[in-house]
Image (cartoon, helix red, strand yellow):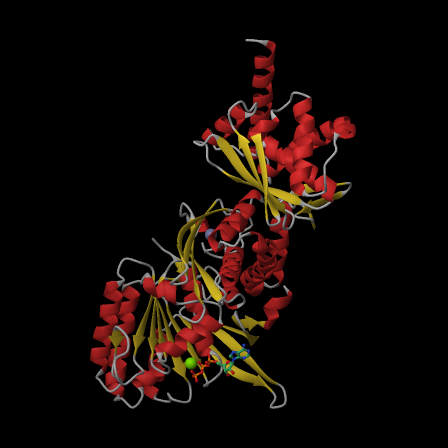
Length: 325
Length: 237
Ligand SMILES: Nc1ncnc2c1ncn2[C@@H]1O[C@H](COP(=O)(O)OP(=O)(O)OP(=O)(O)O)[C@@H](O)[C@H]1O
Ligand SMILES: [Mg+2]
Ligand SMILES: [Zn+2]
């Protein structure tokens, strides 16, 4: 194995390693790989900034100038790139043949690991940096084709990112606190002791209201309602609350059936004895699902829990339906 | 297997202690408008939350009205009806509107047969049965017929381990025949207006007849949207 081959293999394995790690940490995923890549790009950019002379501040010109710099250093072949502006989006086409990240690209997809194309991200970062505007990369995955196609477009709102700045942790830009189930359990227990009757409704209502806010924040990014809800449910899973699976999504009849696995509510209620007799527990999940679907289908929706892990079932099951029925 | 059930109303459930064995019979009595149907709705919600099968016999209002009440107190009945966990018997409408219908003028024997049929369809599952209100069903009937029906029916339901809740509107029933049989119930909840005309309050008493104990404490309650009967004394630990 030549020295270069070895370095390429190393580079790809480093990326694959990062993907594996980010798929295992809470709130991990694509974003962290993107962030790491951006930091590498930033270092490169600082190093070669003096050679960088874009014709204008248009995204296409910025990208071309940046690829020229990289090409001059022998890092990439500029003839493998095609940039084309489409409205406020920039279409990027990159030949896959000869791409140094090819192994990462194919292996990550084969193994279902988080993947972001480092070359797309590199262009995106430079555009964001120069224009001082947030941009995002959307990839169309077409592993059979000879080239990867992506779009660099103005980004919507912050992603579901858990980040730390000084003493503050934030999720999607909003201050977050990580609460252990012990702490949260005693909070619930205190409510239960003072006013047991209101606990289910408190859980339902608080979750409903918070979920409306979450929905509205993410809404502009997903024109497809199902994708939007899937994203939100995935986010809930990242937070360690429950893992949802949509088993029915019938927009015409306004009906959804969703399963939940590993409900922390079920665990919490059992651990802290928050009922007198075995009982369905996941009122906060009901509130969340009712809120998401009320927004998505633009109609007042309600949610009932039909099966629950707290009753020994292998999963929780929720039905979402219009209130007026 | 001995399973025990609750009302789903803390304060009341505390008095019940270990819970009510399935097969227990509950009488809810009180004046019109005091909150019996609301309490029954909570009893159903609690039952569905435990995965019981619940039967609701509507004598005073249509099943549609009871569905609305359930919704008002935070339970959407439809998914439970679709899975046969909640079954309505319409003993209110003149014309049949539901799968199970009872014409008010028919003999009680016929009612019993219908109740048996509905119960049989749900056999093998923990069952709750609510009759709202039994007093309407018995209204204007011969005392001998009432007595026989009542005794026989409760005996059956006990044997079948059904948690039975009969609602009684006080002013409708002053029939001595019925009052005599009230000792057949394991738990009696009396709901009434308390306080003064300027500050009306609602209160209830829970009586446990079988053990000979009658808990004399007066529980004040309010009716809250989405929840139902809330015992005021319970709100402050
Ligand atoms: N959210 C609420 N807050 C306060 N009061 C309410 C609320 N919802 C309903 N009520 C009151 O509760 C009462 C309804 O009680 P319910 O229907 O249970 O009475 P009932 O004992 O079944 O009467 P009836 O014998 O006539 O059927 C009404 O007086 C109504 O005004
Ligand atoms: Mg009533
Ligand atoms: Zn559950």
